[in-house]
Image (tube, rainbow, N blue to C red; front, side, top):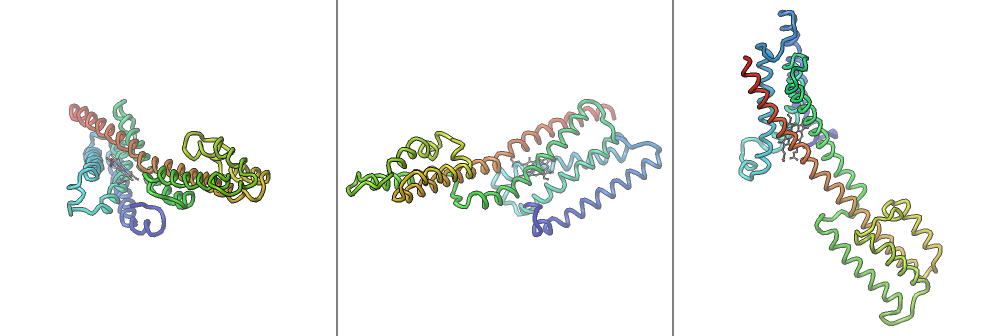
Length: 285
Ligand code: HEM
């Protein structure tokens, strides 16, 4: 679905070429008409009107992605495969920009036409941002979250690890029989005051949220306590690291799924403005 990377670009190449040729063709016809008539054709000229109709058609097609994604029946219709539909959505959406600029005859028009043009630019820009996020986030996730798990499982997994860690601490304290391990009190104190609230997602001290600060915090602690307690401290370090990874994973997931809440309402506003623009224009033709 994405444009980035060599394999994805090959898949999009035909659409890219078609868009370049169509844009070049439109610019040539526009320039020839402008030379013939001695003025820049605007929205009410025959060429401008045709470009306006094509642009509105493209925006109507762009909006069809919404029902297609939302309703199962539309998604399973064999008419156009989802990948093809997405490529058309991206490239026709981009093509709408030169079409709208030529349709306007390089003039701002009234406030409604100007807002419509700005909104088109913003919707297309938000689409590009979404596309970049969809390409960037999964890669970033691989780098930053090697322990990735289903997002609904993160808290349960942490709770299981915490329970196991507390059992080991109790053993080290001699609470389940056996001798107390030297220096374990210091680990227990740090666990209850700083690490546990962080792992449970209650507090976010910078000494643990930043990986470099966390490494130096644990290195300082380790230097202070006897070697017998180092294994428990290392386990605690790994638990804090896991919390950090899950936190990053939650944040990246949020962006991956919520950027559409910018793109979609703006698209709806664009259609509203377009309808108003068509209504106003028809009264003057
Ligand atoms: C005229 C301009 C455009 C309009 C009106 C428009 C409208 C829409 C709509 C209605 C959706 C479906 C929202 C949903 O599923 O809830 C969508 C999704 C999307 N659009 Fe656009 N769009 C436009 C241009 C673009 C452009 C230029 C790009 C990229 C360069 C783009 C990228 C996307 C992406 C990546 C999705 C999500 C698809 C998915 O995750 O399945 N859009 N758009």
